Amino acid sequence: MMLDARNSKNPFKKLVADRSGNFGIMTAFLLPVVLATGGIAIDLTRMVQVRSELQNAADAASLAAATAMASKGISEEEAVELAREFLGAQMANLVGSSSGPEGDGVNEELERLKQEAVINAVSTSTSKSANSFDVTVNANYTLGLNGLTALLGFKQVTLAATSTSQSATESKNALSMFLVVDRSGSMGENTNTVNPAQPTKQEAYGCGWSTCYRTVTNYIIKIDALKAAVADLAAQLDEADPDTQYVRTGTVSYNSSTQTETKLAWGTAKSLSYVNALSATGGTASTGAVKLAYQSLIKTSENTAHKNKNGQVPSKYIVFLTDGDNNNTSDDTATKSWCDKAKADGIEIYSVAFMAPSRGQALLSYCASTSSHYFDANDAEELVASFRRIGEEASQAGTRLTN
Image 1 (cartoon, rainbow, N blue to C red):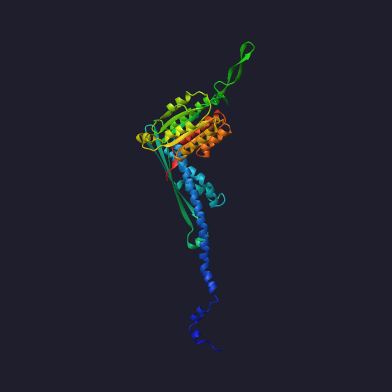
Image 2 (image 1 turned 90 degrees about the vertical axis):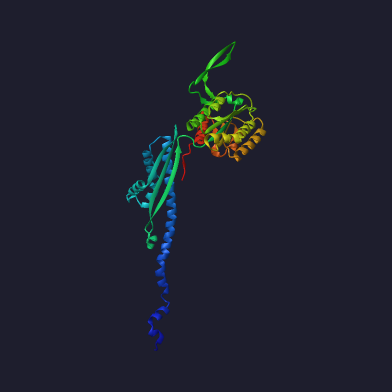
């Protein structure tokens, strides 16, 4: 048996030349890397999810605290504690799922998360009757990484989220609103709502040669329900803008024709007086009134009025109400056309179908800017609630995320 002199003189070269064990060696080197790579992929997905939940929790906490400062008048210290508790409540499920069964430090982790969050609440006076409120929440969450990622030496990662919200006790957004209200004869009919101030009344009827009277239920009539609803809307706008620096309103009524309007003016007093003077009579033709509201709002002079007083370009709204169908279907088509123009020019349209039949409902649903801008009121209470909601949304001081 003869030996290869070259290999016998250099056994290392022989080892290198022998490839029978290379796969095992490569596997030994690469397996931890492959496993760690898989661990990183899993952890990255989890990090994105947790970071999103942390941000949502911080947003919710700052919004809740800023809103409470404006609506409930809580102090800066109370707002900080509210945000802290809100943050913990929002993160409870996540911390529980990340920390294992109850008793494995879940409560301790939640408390650490709440206490380590940096939260600031600041109240600033903006006028003699109003304040703005800013709440900032900075939150951190330490996420444990899985054992595969730990092969690369990383055992945990700290995720951070920041949220700032602002609220105010008066509207910071200038607005111009035009009411388009139906005063046709059907608005003199009863609603389904009993008048709480006088639930019964005496009704005359013929009995032989004389007039007799009987006691009947006293229902609120539609035109009176409209007056109450507009008063509630006006109250919302006045509360948001007590110094009449931001809100302008105008109103036009219609039956078979369009009546003379009360033009856009600061505050709500003129519009409220206009509506309170309405009586129900005549047919229904909405085109002219919707057209007038649209043309009033898009005038350059309306923007100039706001610019001169509050320095803003106003948000613009039409509130359109009917309790019936237009007498002619051509009015439906023409009204829809003016609604389209208004929406195309950035005017938001709220519409209220007040005990209206299907065609009237279809028209108002079409004109509404979105489905949430359409209200179907079937009694006086629902009508008032609809107008209150419109007032709240339009005059909302803007508790909003600013960062």
